[in-house]
Length: 239
Image (cartoon, rainbow, N blue to C red):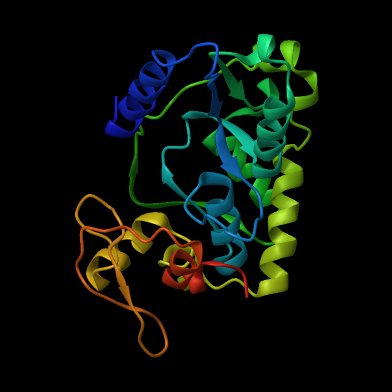
């Protein structure tokens, strides 16, 4: 299990220990997100494969493509949060819900073929060194659909691919944006670390204003003002 996965489990366990009459946590275990949004992620599988196909004509697989992955549109994730917040406490108190659709447990290769079919002239290709991926799993979403039917996702992966293509055309997506710090989280974190915007623990440091974009100085404090946080990443939204 990855450190990321362990952190999720430990967070749920810690919060569950605090659940009582005055504190009612609910745990939403989202499938892998996809779809267009103002804060696009270019490094999640559907967005990435669609972006590569649009920008280069190659639906570029970084693994063998045999792995299963549960998928869910970002809009459906938001709807699930909204429904949970408004639900009767008895339905959601100290409960965990997988967010997604059973029909969107797909092999990565199947997603690549859906992208290929949506992008004329594109072909499925493998990145150099593509191989196995330990992230290979399917998930049941029955609990969410049965207990909170209003939270059931409505998007399909095929519809999400078409939505992404519309957004990529509108904004003239370039490969450099897709794989660079604008839309790729690891590249963005590296950029922020190199600039001194975050420390080794990925905590933000104090901001000193400068021309163009902020210059940063080491500090143990964290800016609480959301306006300060926004100034750190003005380039990470659609123009």
